Image (cartoon, rainbow, N blue to C red; front, top):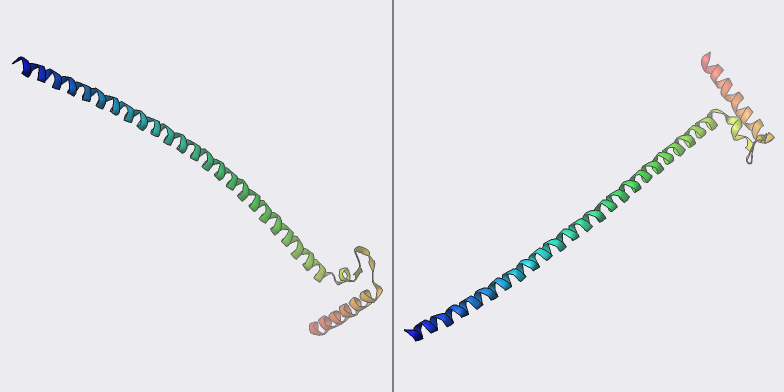
Length: 127
């Protein structure tokens, strides 16, 4: 009976030791899991920060692009208006160089001849 009790005590001690070892392993695993969760949370936070920064940069570039498009459209409109004005005012085409005040006499005479012909054609059509 004594030997059996002794054997049971030894077996109980082994089981207690195994139980203690399992509890320690479980705690270590829980610590690792918590550490991984924390690391994952940090990664998500960092990723969100980077993502938000990228979105902000994209919005800024989009605004710059819209401003450039607006400027381009205004420049194109100004060019169309200038071309239209040049067609309506043939004497403007008879200017020499960059100085709009200085007229080339040959071009002025040619333009005046064309304008006279156009006026005559308009008069003929009116009659």
